[in-house]
Length: 238
Image 1 (cartoon, rainbow, N blue to C red):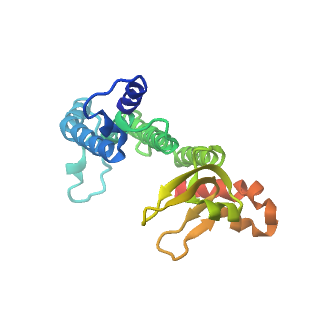
Image 2: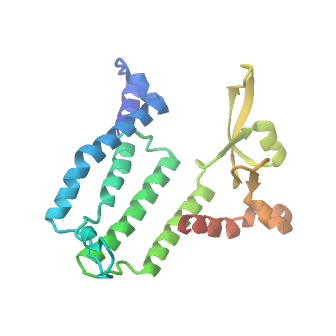
Image 3: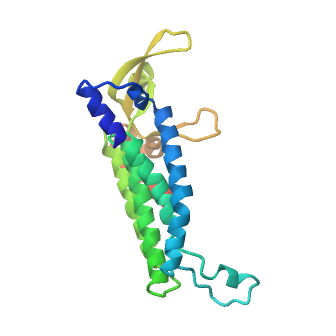
């Protein structure tokens, strides 16, 4: 919200000392960390005390284990502190037009709702099993489907690569621009729409999901969703 306000002020011709700092992601990341720490340190304890007053505590089955009674009454639903420490700084200082920020906020909130529902059933419905496992899995599958479809259809989800390489590979080029290389020479770079990803710690780690449908030849890109969506769902739920 602050970042959006700053962009609006700049577009309207208002310039204040230091306002340009908000255009740097490193500055906004630092501000987000500070806000997150403030929420965790200053409000975390108060939230825990509030949950204790509401008697929102963990009930422990008597298994005859040493120290299990010490855990009884430990406030549950404490994950709300983590959710607040992530979501609030992002809403304040992040670029809310960035598709990756929106996906992150969606995933965090979505999974937070699942966790909250699980704790609510345990505490207020007095059901120690909480939310049924099948509903948890269905919730994660739903999130994975949304993420996968967004990555497939959104023009904002792109891969940056050398323009010549993009043209050679036949990728759909969304945008081109110039960036200086190590010697300061301008190089043509492109944002391309592709299912290309990378595998960490492997040499030549670029991998295109279309390769899994090699037997379809030039039609692989049309049907890549058949493997892409299930794999993204698996990654989200695993």
